[in-house]
Structure formats: C-alpha cells, structure tokens
Length: 310
Image (cartoon, rainbow, N blue to C red):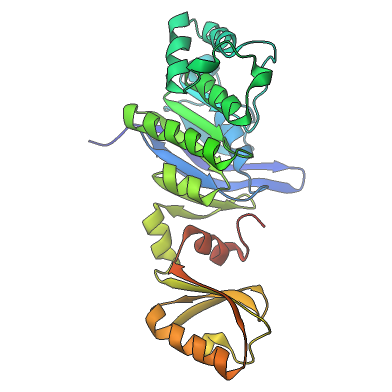
C-alpha cells in the first residue's frame, strides 16, 4: 500500500531583491521518510525550510502539508508539525522541566508528556538544571524534545547538530534514529555534514545556490556519479604528464593544481601501478596516498567543483 504523502513542494521559488534563494524546486516526502537537504551555507536550505514551516511565503509555486496549504490552515498545521531551528533560545532561568512544561501548555498537553520527553531525549538527570547551565549538546536535546512534544507528523530540523562535538552529534543522531523506528513521522533535515545525511536519511537532495543538483538514495546518487574508486594523493611538485592518460582514469580533480588531487578510476588495481610508475619516472616524492570507494563528498565535488565545506 502506498504511504501517505505528508509534504509536497511544487515549483517553489523565492527571491530577495536580486538574489534567487530557492529556484523552482519540487519534491515530496512520505510518512515515515527521512529526507536530507544537503548543501553548503547559502545554498537556500534554511529559506526552503522556513517556507515549509510557514514562516516565509514563497513567491511562486505551492507547498502542501498533509494536502493543505498554510493559507487558512495555520492552527491545524502547527499542531502536526515539530520544528527545531539552527539555534533555539529558551528562558535561561527556567529549568529543563519548566521549559518542557511551558511548551506543553501551548498544546494543552498534560505535564506527564514533559516527563515522557525527558526520558526520550535523555535529560532526566538535568530536569532541575537551568537552561543557561546546559551544554551545547544538552540544549539541542532540549530543542529536539520541544519539537517532539506534540507527537508531530512532520518534523523539520534545520542543521540541528551544527557546532556540536562528535559525541553530542552522535547522541542526537541516535535519538532521531530511534524516533524513526518507533513512529511514522516524516522528517526534513538540513545539514552540511555528509555523514549526517548518510546515517539518518532515506533520501538525499543535494542543493547549491538555490537549486537541486541531484536527488535519490545514497546508492542511487553514487551510481549517478559513476561507481568506482578514488586515489587521493599529494606530491612535492607538479606532474609533468597528464594524469588523465593513465589507464582506467575517469576523472581528475585538483585541490592544488598539479600536486594535490584525486583520481576517480574504474579499477584501482589497474591504475595504481601506473600512477606509482609515473611518480618514479618524474622523480616525484609521494607525501600522501589514500585509496577508497567513491563517496557522497566526491559526488558533491563533481557537481559543484568544490568541497561541501569550502
């Protein structure tokens, strides 16, 4: 049986004066599906999320949440949606428990729901702690807890782990992964972390300069790039011959022209001996060498010509 479509975005465009922030994008998200909007700062991810949230109005196109637009349906849609922004400000001198009780009251929920959320996000030990005494990771857990209070059908998370240390980031991932197993919530996650999109999401949309560059599951995206392997290297001075002429080489990308780059190859066992022979022939010194499978980062570079975090 087909899953319910909870989010529909059709040919949506948003401009700010001469800047096209979101340029004619379309997609759908089903119940229970996690979708990542992956792209660098300035890609248009936050603007798109804010239009889906109803904070901003699109210039063109249509956005439907459970088949309804924001126009005239604001109260109903707010009740089925959970939102966590890049940075959420709470009252510093309220405790974690008081904060959750406050937001529970906005939905007319009993205090028992706040207690459930404390357990879900792992903040039971911090229930009496003032917000201004929480760590960055604990604040993000609290923000996620607030977003989950109303058992949302649609969860929108705008870079929820930016600035967190790896351990705190992994804790947030584990919470979201558990939520996915135990609910039918649809989630859109904006991120500029490749590993976050790969770990959490069923489908990934790569976004840059307001447009969608690629969309699909991770295997689909990698296949569209061209399945293969990568030789990443650093040498002490530029190559004299073109690396494109080596056998099995599909593409060459330079981080530093002539000395630091990577080869995308069909078969590393064919290319690597010829690559090493060329280094010896040109009397170069190999400073770094790494071989691996093609990744999502490689796909992004192939589409934009630069790394995600540049």
